[in-house]
Image 1: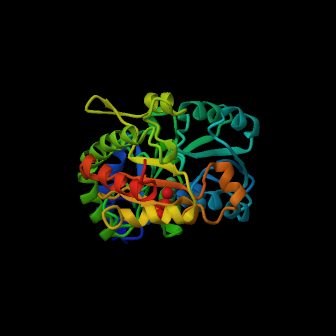
Image 2: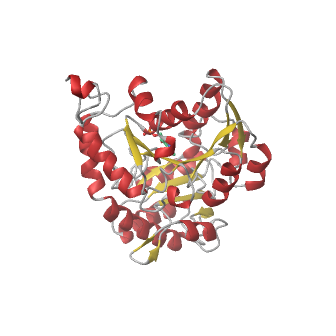
Image 3: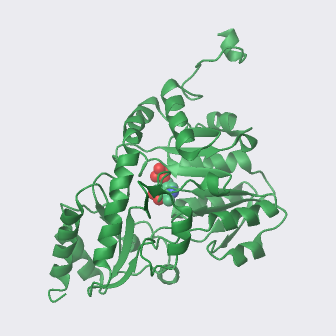
Length: 361
Ligand code: PLP
């Protein structure tokens, strides 16, 4: 015990500091992000909190994407302010805006690879260049992509967070996160994670090791199907908008093609599709009820099954309606997380819902 506590022998002392299951999972996370270091945490939010408390201190400044997941936005603005950390919220897809607000006290620029729910793609290389010119780090939340679709560290990011709750675990039965990075950023990470109590439980890690074993297969299938579904929905008369980075007319298509991995030689663009039904909440409810139970309503994402969500009344409900409009979120906006079912089955369900709300379409 004395040798363990002195760090002279490798091993485990107390599960809050680490255990074999989290080491095995961290090894998988490192491999799939080509990272030198990884810490598995009790949730995606715990991984983001770990990035904040390990990398920032009073007097620092962060540049924050205006499209971040709501709790992350709150963490890096309101909660950060309580620790004396200043923040500026900008559209990180507009590199000139980031360049304008970054300054010598900025230590982190944070954005998401694929933003929720409009699926805009971040220019990771461009943001890394701007951040590094100010000696700041680029922190990417890669949850909507997963490491199968995008590996931000290879594109210039310094730190990557995943809510493993979603695509990486893939079975909707754990809450888990990970922070990946390189040794240069890692000094404070293990002690901060232990002191703030952010590490994950052995059981969640064990479940996630099972989920990760099929991640490549699941994401390969789901992204191929998502592309096919998006192509089949394209131009559908019941939809007034369709957002999917894999469609050639999507403004982020070029960037996505450049930054996202190929799977078995094919371009892949993720498993998320967002569209807008031309109608009000009543019509949206009818659509969602028609799809149920085959395509269940679920504000989370990344399950084996295809699920549907309504951003206005779930993830973005705390925003004012004018703010939602600015972000392009309307009562008719619907987000799909495509699963591993056959594309024809998923499309048949969608077609059933669309016919229910627009019989002539
Ligand atoms: N990042 C994104 C993009 C998310 O959508 C979420 C949750 O929905 C989180 C982080 C937080 O993850 P968790 O729920 O695992 O804490």
